[in-house]
Image (cartoon, rainbow, N blue to C red; front, side):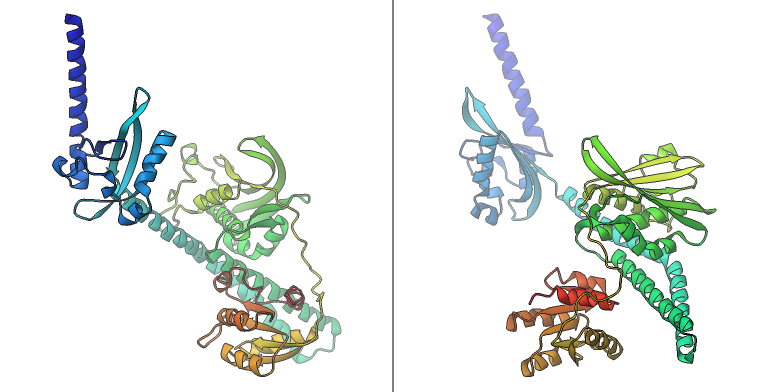
Length: 506
């Protein structure tokens, strides 16, 4: 009898201690609900966080803590239902205090059973508003610094880009001088024309890659021929390494295409090249290589392409190696880097379904290896420069720059079209209403109340069967098209114009 009394006393003391503990917790609202959601117990944490005293809240339904919208959508009952069916309910969301103010709550609901029968729910609520606000501020700062890092990299490229462009302009101006003189030597004239064509292509590739690097866009995975991609951005990479560093390539001839976003790949490569350059203050060699690998260790299983970016620099100390992919971590002096370059590479590789690895030896250099999944065979590029399609009919050219219009008219006429040219969208609508055309070829950026994209959407409504081709030299504007209309990047060549027209729906 004494032993039984002692056990009951111990149980009473244990329950009393537990009750005092629960009631005294100030950072958490800890309370009980009956099976229907009526509040049956309340602690000091609930009073502090939600503002209700026990006398005010006991016997009330817990749904009063939810917003009007959540109550109208049946969220409180749904939370209890999930807790009952799944054994636990967790979420974060807005809740309402007694004074009507909102706070961001972390909520856990557990069902309580006795002898197999549901007797109620244990509910834990914590006010995490400050944590959420801090997270939002951190994400905003990360986004701002990510953009800053891009422009910091662009700033580092400026000198090299200016040098390259001055060389291109020198080639063009010198060749034009030769053409103006009307030299009798046909070979010299052909060389001058070829030099202008080459310089134009290199200048177009350079500006396109700079704009691609600078713009923000959604990830668009596609099959990419790595060797062709490297050739297209060679000028940007050369500018990135500067004059004291040599850029070399070791790309296997049989390397598979890769499946990834072209813009993100280019940004990652440029970040790695600039990082390698900074690791060689006295000069050296950066080597970009690519090879096929077959992986069989989870989570990476299957065919991959390994892209190596190696330098002959100082190497990375072992105590730093584990931190290099952390956002904002940098060993560079203040003002020389944001610490986001390698973080971008890491995020890009994993988002693409691969990974990035690093091997380094002090005094001998570092190799970053980006593993990307194999893609389907990339489409072959037409390098002949000859138009594959010739047409007939009338095209309305909408272009405000008269010099650009003159060139475009010449290309369209070579393809067999009659051309009517107007300088803005309003004039284009009048021309279509009066005379009609077979298709419209419009620049996007134009003066006036209506740009080329707005014109295209308007024409789709009033002339749904009229083919429309857009053109622009500004990548961020092109991103706004969202695939609704075909778009041709300036500067374009006659075969590119021909291919774009051939793909227009008829």
